[in-house]
Length: 283
Image (tube, rainbow, N blue to C red):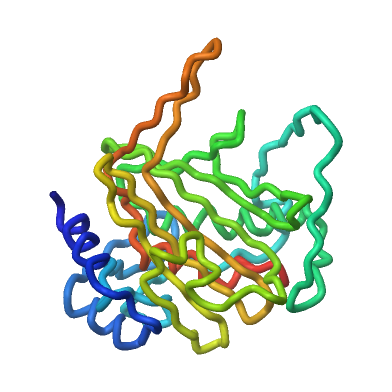
């Protein structure tokens, strides 16, 4: 059993905190483990803190020079720089899904979806490249598209991107979603992908709120981690990773489910992505 699995088991045996002191936790993390690497192609030196999920340790966003240093958000023309793959919409098998109606904390974004896809993709690609360990590739999941790319989901007014990290025996799933924050959405753990597994929440200096968590490794080896930021500007960003895989059966065969090694991205790395200023619906 590796150290991360053992510490996750220890974590869920205790009651989670109700609030994270981000500054203190970053300092605690820095004292425990610290390693640096030069990010190829970015010219950015990043000190990557390997966080473990326990009630006493969740590294926060990278405002500190000893924390994460992700590439700055790109400027210029997103549509010209993002090298997007054409996405073929499948023929509808029935009437289109109605758009979900709910009140949001501010007016809905007016950016055209195609422009939003290009802009957000241009932010996400270098962010993933900055945190993924050497020896792993970041593959997209859109048919015919090798690179990760955002998609706009009209019925729920949100953008999402799926990536798969491959290599060294890994095949991790990573998902990033952006959605307008609902007016009645709860703050903190209650709004996370799995409130019962939320390990803590905190208010960030810019007025945003952060909640993080991880599932307890099951006997089959399933693990999931996430970081969710409810931005002060009205965007909710959720970044998740897991090791759950379904292989579709052919000719009506039953799909098979398997679990890979524990995901490589830590809660701290997911947080660093979720708090990037460019991942917003209100540029």
